[in-house]
Image 1 (tube, helix red, strand yellow):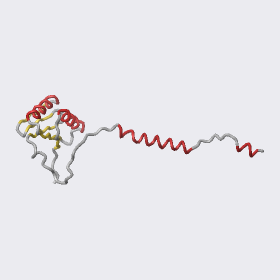
Image 2 (cartoon, rainbow, N blue to C red):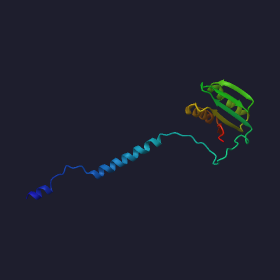
Image 3 (cartoon, one colour):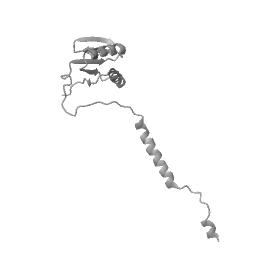
Image 4 (cartoon, rainbow, N blue to C red):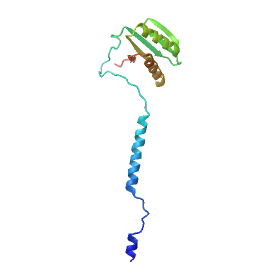
Length: 142
């Protein structure tokens, strides 16, 4: 009689298999969430080990130097040079140069100590103006 009574009693144990299923699903969800909030920008990089001369196909070359002080130098075709200007003046100069010659390339120059955020600001500015070709000036590695 005692065996029948033990057989039909309610068990108060945790069923671990459904619990693990739920934990694994939550783990997957929380692992995928950071990727949904990441932002990025598209950069077309050449697939060659040799450096490419990016300026030979363009009539106008706009060079933007990012300074440590938060100001910028604007150089157009290695002739017109405007030093220590702010973002608004830089934007106006770039728009003017693009309006004069739409076949332009923008080159960005900065030292190693410049924060990444400053380069992103310039890339966003160029994108909002409508510049289609952007390059980075680097020191050649021999």
